[in-house]
Image (cartoon, rainbow, N blue to C red; front, side, top):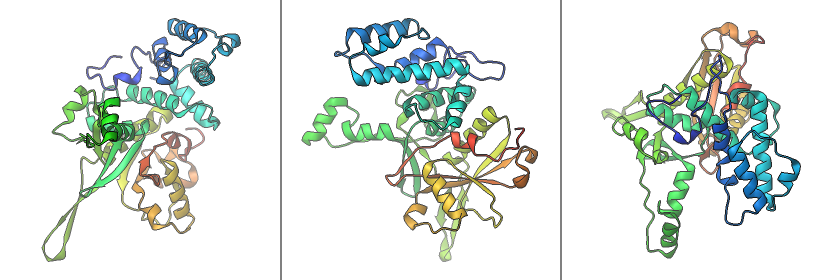
Length: 356
């Protein structure tokens, strides 16, 4: 399971076995990876019961924990965090694979697991799915499925930056608590060292422990002013939107076993628009309004990062009433400029034939 290129070493993937379908079996190593989350880390104030529980779970992550052991943890937040870990762990072991657990959790509609644990599962799933990927742009695009992004416009480019990294750099200038103190005192001006990922620096993605500092260019077209008032527009072959499309295609094929093609587009030009799926909460609402011919305010429309068309390689795998029709996808930011993709939407809302 160890790739020659060890991207995302924090995914908790290796060593992790696959079943005959290629789905991931939860190992003790992965359970320890979840146990190592900051929410479960021991601190100076940890009581003896919490220390004993943590150490015993690290030694044997799948062991049974009695209600008395859990209730003995004195700190209320710590006790709840361990209860969540045990709920996730038991769900993984019961489902048998990470994929089956994720699908069950998403299809149940019961949000009893914090996003940080779901994101950890999605990261491991993508790390497995992209194990042979050598395209840094696709890997950076895949991060959008489990890490909150902040979208900005800069010199005609639409750029996606890792929100947690941008917030940290703004708060501490990358210097931790010392940097925060210097910024607060005015002795240090914010300095954010970020790079737009491209062919010239892609090799650093594999080597750089600060890979979350790479911005992803989501610009779909480049414009060039010509003489006589003409403007030449050229679709960018290396757009991060295309890289994201390739990742989403693999995501669908891995879970649902159907081949689809996804391409970014500017607008929906289809008088017989039949089906759409928002890749996030905001785009779902916008597409619903547009489909129902409800007015959409200009500021909401401006939040659209991109639209996509999704087509099935085999129309027979679609519902009969929409077979052969494109599915339109949307991607949009929240009002604060952040973007959180919900990759489960593609698994729950495609118009699949009953047998798919």
